[in-house]
Image (cartoon, rainbow over all chains, first blue to last red; front, side):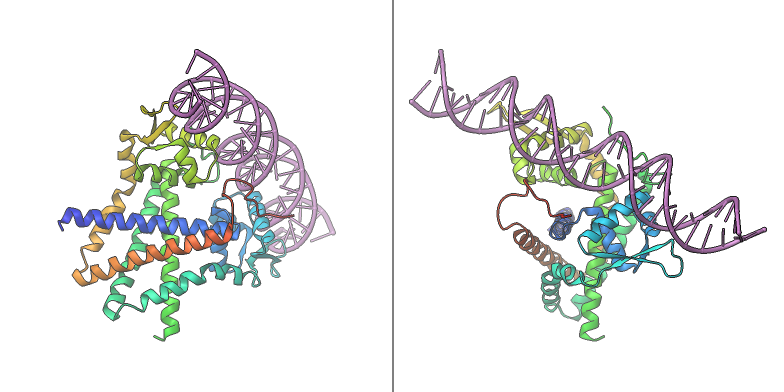
Length: 167
Length: 167
DNA sequence: TGCTTTAGTTCACTAAAGTAAATTATTCAG
DNA sequence: CTGAATAATTTACTTTAGTGAACTAAAGCA
């Protein structure tokens, strides 16, 4: 195999992985009745613990009004809860509804199991290489995402006037 | 590190990879001025060569009318072309506009380079393990996607009546 | 205690993208 | 050559989710 061939094979594999991840992500969204943004927001809430509506607006780039709608949708499907912040009752804390977790986790159960079984087939050295590869790939993707986002919006927020179409 | 800890670490790494891929994909979409579905459709057209509008409707699950709009958007951004099928002039062939490729490829250039550099740091055995891991992960994701999609829609197509919300 | 600021929601409106059905162009069968 | 079938587009309408601004409630300061 030539260098060029190897590079092409790698790129193809990367493309297939990326596509598979994206399609899986979309399937999960459909399964849970969530749109891409809602799905991502739910992920944020899961990982960053309870968030205020304002914090969510900040990290999603939405207006406060839109966040109310977003949280309504998540709440309607039973994924999150609203609780007034005891420390500052103007604030509202949005957290994952513990009762919803089984459903959410259920969607990933099969994947988890299959991945564990796959990992069990590798020895120590191989596992280390794979972990290193994944860690570095994540870092690269994050860097490229930042680069691309920075290039696209030299100033201002995503929230307003983000139209590109002409004609 | 206990088995449980290792499993948790793996799952976390998988989650981070998935998130990174999805966010990168979204960033590319924004960069190219494409919505998720448009982006995916463009990928389809790229890989499966020229497609008729009907074929595109089939594989995206959209109605013919929606495909017209989809192709209009892709065309407006200069990514694809419409050409009447010489064999059957009712048909229209949608293909990637060769002039647009540089822009599209440009978005991935940085990623490509960084990934090549990363792969160069691994020896033969490690590379083999990584390739095996990626290949199997893709297969698992595809299987899980199919399973989830099948579970969500026991019958019929995505196209009609796919509403889940109540209230 | 009252004035100002902050947090979130509600309301009226807009834009995007989908469906269903009518329309146009072309092919194919008799 | 005519009529039925097929491919895509157009049109009218619907749904969804966003914005911006007005509004309500609570907090903090003088």
